[in-house]
Image (tube, rainbow, N blue to C red; front, side, top):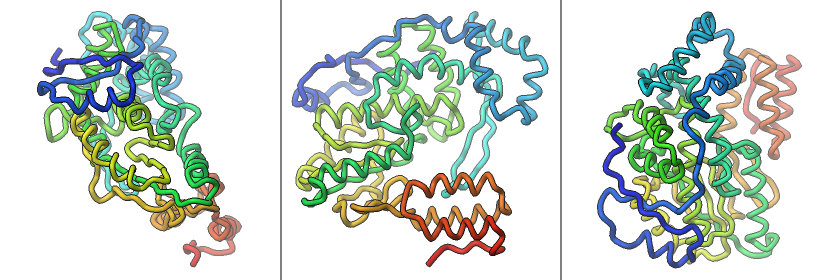
Length: 376
């Protein structure tokens, strides 16, 4: 199994902020990956590949998918297929199949790669065992693809942090807003595998994860994770967890929130935010081989309205981003009054100041208007 030429350098977990900051700035040999000395996943590969875990993973995977043809075909000989997968995994002969690629617009064009049912079943088996372990290593204010977190909690914490950092809106608070450029498409396989190896003792598990990671081939060799994989969500959080700990412990940012590749830092000190920005960019480039999107980095006052996670946040309220609003109206028209779609958007609108939009949804649902227009 080819893991690349990555060499791991461990740094003690309880190290002072200045030492950690100085460590990553020191010149190192090319191909070296620095990881924090961390808790180890001590279980063997059989916890993932056992028939019991594969069956449990199937029960989770199949929810809401019984009507799909590829799932039905796999389910016809379910036990035979699961036992065959188990035998391949136990013998070390498992190989990930190729992906089916298709495009969506949500709202910008995205390329989705769909694995076979057999491979997606394995993704669920991996996720259900490794997620609880890795979740304990994540910081409290990482909100993407985590149980008990999510976008709406991130929105509420942003409001709390804006109030705290401005001393209950009596001082000027500044917000550094950043976005990682082409995040999933530029995750480095060798770096990711080295990070996983630092957490996992069992070499068979590392080899299995490497097989899943390296099954995806984008335009560049050894780069990128597919958006369609459940494991990609976990791997992305493991990857960015290194940035989270750097920002929290080395830079000592008190009010930091990350959701996937979007993150914000709030402070009353604009000069400090300007000073840490190149350090964050340098850390991303040196340690994770990522870079910030130059057009999506900004420092603005919290009172001026911060566009974060689809909402524009003000001190006393938040409103839906105009682009999000238009997309919502367009989808409702396409769904031809689908009640499930309307209920979904009502849930979304409940998290902000959207009285006019809710009235339009009510009129549309009651048939008062055959056409939905955005409120002026």
